[in-house]
Length: 322
Image 1 (cartoon, rainbow, N blue to C red):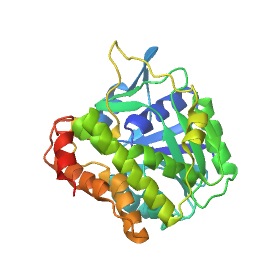
Image 2: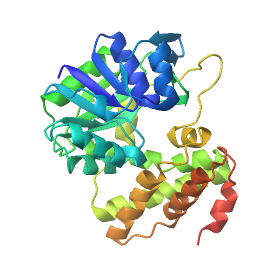
Image 3: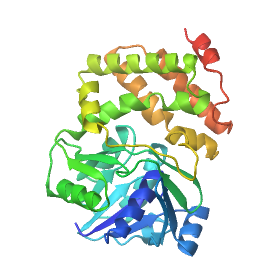
C-alpha cells in the first residue's frame, strides 16, 4: 500500500490525515462545504494539547475526484449514517477489489461495505477528537493521539492490515493488526451505546442509569445471539494508560461524536448504527431492548429538531420507559 484516501476529514479522518501527511505518507482527503474550502485555502489546523499545527492536506470535494489505484486503500471516516451515500459514489469509481477500511463506530458499516468491496477491514478507533469548526480538528490525547486495532472484517489478518498499522505508527498512533477484529468492534459498540445519552442529556445520575441499562441490554443481546466480544478486562489492558487526555487552548474536551452532531446541528445522529444495532440483534435473538429503542427514537428526534446538547432531561427518559 502506497497511498491512503480518507473519505471524511472530520475529527478522526482529519486528525489522522494531518499526522500522516506530516510523516510523509501519501494521503488525500474528501471533505465538503466550508470545511473543504478552509482546508483548500489555508490548510488543515490540527490542535493537540502540546501544539497547534497547520498541515497542507490534499483535498477533493467528492469521492469521484479521488485517484484510486491498485495500491490505494480507502479509509471511511464518515459518520455511519452517511456510509450508504458514500458507498454509492465509491462503487461508481473504484474497482471491486479496492481495499476499504472502516474507521467508524458501530458494526454495520463492515457489512454494508463488504457487499460491494470484499476486501473490507474493520478498524477499532479509540481516539478522543473533535471537529466543530471548518478547517480545524482537535485531538485531545498526548503523546499518543489514538489507538487503532485493524483486521479483515472476515476475521483474518493480512499484509495490508499490517501495512496500514505501520503507516499509522509512522504518524505517532498506537496501531496493531489483530485477528477477529469484529470481536473488538462489538466491545467498542458496547462502549458507544451511551453516546446518545451523553449527547442529549449530559451525564448526571439519571443519565448514567440510562447508560447502565442500555449496556445491560446490549450484553444480553450479544450473549443470546452468540456474539463474541472482548471483555472489560481485555479492553482496559489494551487501552492501559496510553491515552492521556489533556486540554487544548486551556479548555477541556468537548463531547463525543454524537454530542458533536447535535452541537453542529447536522440534523442526523448515529443512534441507528449504535443503539439501533442492539435493537436489531435483540429482535433476532428474542431479547427485548426498550432502553435502546427509546434512545434511537429520542436521539433521532433531537437531531432532527436541532436541539442543543444536554437539553433533554434524562429523568424524563427514564420515566418514559415501560
